[in-house]
Length: 245
Image 1 (tube, one colour):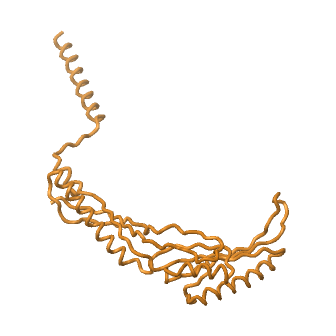
Image 2 (tube, helix red, strand yellow; image 1 turned 180 degrees about the vertical axis):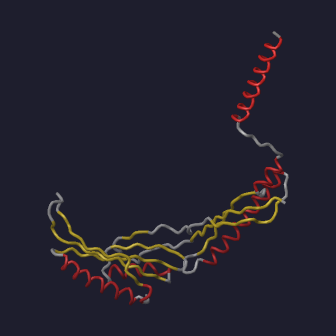
Image 3 (cartoon, rainbow, N blue to C red; image 1 turned 180 degrees about the horizontal axis):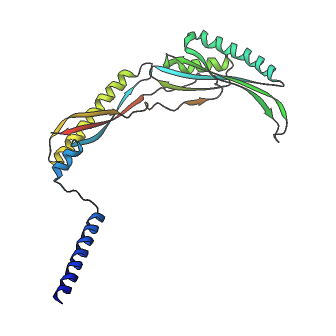
């Protein structure tokens, strides 16, 4: 009788051992360690990440003038021929204002059919050409606009302002933006009770300077067209990563 109970006990014990082994294999593996050990293993450098902004103002020294002429005739060939004559007159007037050849270029050219109100039949053909001219004397751009409309035959035009060489203004704004980022990082470090370390990484997030939107003009009136120039705002945004000392 005792032998039977012993046999049963041994069988139960073996089953418990097997169950324990199976359970152990089915459990997820969890690794634990101190925070410093985990940080060191991940190679993450403690840092303060911040950004900085700066804007500098400059008076524009360049006007980009877009002028165009168009023609509508019964045939595409006639529209092209008439447009060529109008464009030649306009280009000659632009160059007579002192704009050199390298500062005049074609920004667009199009020839296509004109349909009736129902869109079922062609009534003629329209051709237009858009020219781009650089005007370096921004204070007299109003007179230039009058000349290309009244004497050059331009039927549509627009103008925007910029800097012939924006690099110096961008460099100044970038320096100020990095200084702004450093001030923000210093304040964050002070609030967190740590010391600010060296710069780890700097990224320029700027895409372009903020120029005024182009202003469109109709046919110029008898008085000289007034085109206030104002100032440009050159904006730079940077992202700077500082180490924690």
